[in-house]
Length: 481
Image 1 (cartoon, one colour):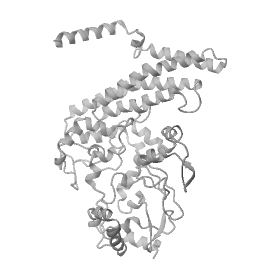
Image 2 (cartoon, rainbow, N blue to C red):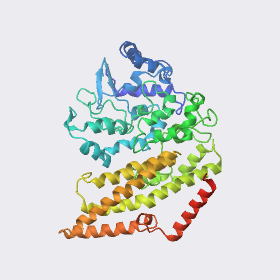
Image 3 (cartoon, rainbow, N blue to C red):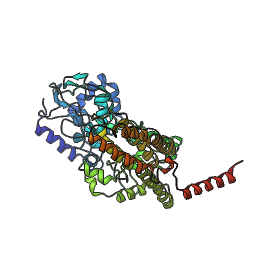
Image 4 (cartoon, rainbow, N blue to C red):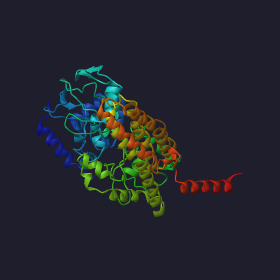
């Protein structure tokens, strides 16, 4: 029998009537006949799925397959399945029937908007530079790039298209990308962190869950965490972490180490759990030049635009102070802010200005010039690694994988490539290119002659050079064998 709007309304009403509290989730007095029928079949056909569900809080609350997968007949992803109208995809809107508060916070986060990358510079690489339209499916007869489908979309989420039989197009499914754009208009996938069908809180709290996406050359948070004292303490004390505890308040239920969830999401003695991962972050280190999070929230139209970075930093202070004293935390943030300022003033701001000045001299197609890759990797890979490294106390990623790589490529590749552009175009027959080359040349000279870069031209201020020589000699005198 098909599910009608009236039936689904009665189902939601039953959930509300059987609930313990709005913040604790919902329980039903007994399992619905529909879910009992689902379970009997899946017990035979999908034993692992049945076992995972049986270990979940959903099972203990009499919430089964039907309560999550039921759909209205007019929904775009609905189809008939053994006499019931269901949907394969369970979206945040579906989860929000019971977990309204959590889904509301998630919808306000950058995680929910991760699918917006589909129109970004990153996807030019995956769709055009790396890919083609060779991967054709019923929903995409003109084709897609397999690099984007299997790479970008699996973490950021793709736009799910449905076939006439109610099943998702193979280009979009399987997909648990955190910002998946769903057929019902919602964004995101709760299963990105709460893997179905157990939806284990302990699994969501482990760093490896976050590391599924937060890893690699441009955002190596899991590698940084593993290097940091926090990661070392976690691995040494994982048996003391009490990960399965329902309350899981830092300083009360565990204190051996923090995980990603501890710092960015989980409860403290003064804060409840949040599913908006930006509420404790005081810098957004994704762009060429770091910005305050309320600035990036405003660009996405998120309510966080009204929450200042100072408030967010206070939220994070509240986490840190469970293990560290005030002086320790204050000093860490001075170090962090200092690195952000160094990177921005020495490399990011002049580097971006030089790249913009060089554009009139470049081939118009993005990434058709060697310098496109050089600048992209300086800020998108190396600059991010430095900034993320310092934010999580990972010195090797801050320096050797970060600022060292930034400096090496800024001076050994980026500068020479800019000089070559100037030399090649300053005698151009095109007056516009001549003018652009002269402008770029002046800006490059001005940059290299500034106090941050004059060492490169062997023009370091004599007083500064003498001071550094004296410091080096004093160090050698005290510590040389």
